[in-house]
Length: 319
Image 1 (cartoon, rainbow, N blue to C red):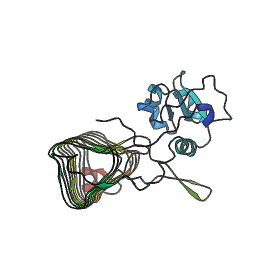
Image 2: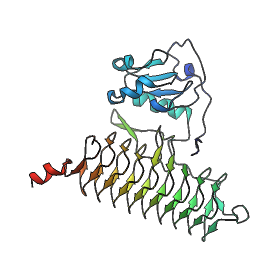
Image 3: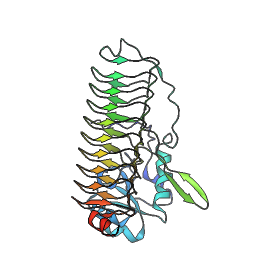
C-alpha cells in the first residue's frame, strides 16, 4: 500500500518549533508520526502509560512527553517535556501541516476524462481531482467525487453519491452508495472552556476484498492512519473514527460506532448498534453482541455482551 502523505508539509527545524528549548541537534523534522512508526528525524509523542511498550521501542529523534514518562523512552530520543502533550502536539502539527485542520474544498475537481481512464466505467456527474489513480476494470457510480491524490485499485466498485478523499484503496473493494471516506475526524482538545481542533494528517487505507455498505463514514487518521483489513465487511451506517485499525476477516453489523484509536483484531464479529470506546484493544476471534457498550480491552477468543460489555456467561447469569 502507498505510504504517500496527502498534506503539504513545511520544512521546519526542531528549534523553530520549540524556540525556548536548547537542542544539541537542530535538524529538520521529517514527519510527525506515532511512537511505533516514527524513524530517525521524526517527531512523536507519548502521553499515556498504556503505550509504554511502543515508547520503549520508538526510533523517533524527538518526543513530546511529560516528566513522569521520560524514563520509558530510549536514551537516543530527545525528550521535549511539556504540561499538556496533546495540546503541544496540536500546535506543532498545525504549524508543520497548516492545511490539515479543515477539509478545504478540492479546487482541482473536474468531470472525469474518459481518455485518461480507458478501462474504468463511470456513471453521470462524476468529479475527479488531480493525480487520482484508478485501477483497471473499476466502476464508479453517478454523482461520486474522488478528490486529488486518491488511489483506487483494480476491479473496485464505487457506488453513487460517494465522496473519497485522503485515501488509498486496494483491489476488489466495494463501497456502496453515499459513503464518506477520508474526511477529518472528530478531534478536539478542551482548554479553558475552548475546544481546539486537532489537525488530522493521516489517511484511510482500505485493503483488498473489503465491502463497505451504504451510508458508512470512515475518518482519516489524526497522526496515524485509519485502516480496514482484508476481507472485512461493514454493514450500513457504520462509523469508524480516526486512527481506528480493523483487522482481517471482520464482520461489523449496522450502526456500530468505533471511537478513535481503537485496535480491532482479526476475525472479529460485532452486532448492530454496539459502541467501542476509544484507545481500546479488541483481540482476535472476539464476538461482541448487538447493542453492547465496550469500555475496556477484550482478550482473544472472548464473547461479550451488555453495557458495560461482560462475558456472555456473566451477562446471561445476571438476566
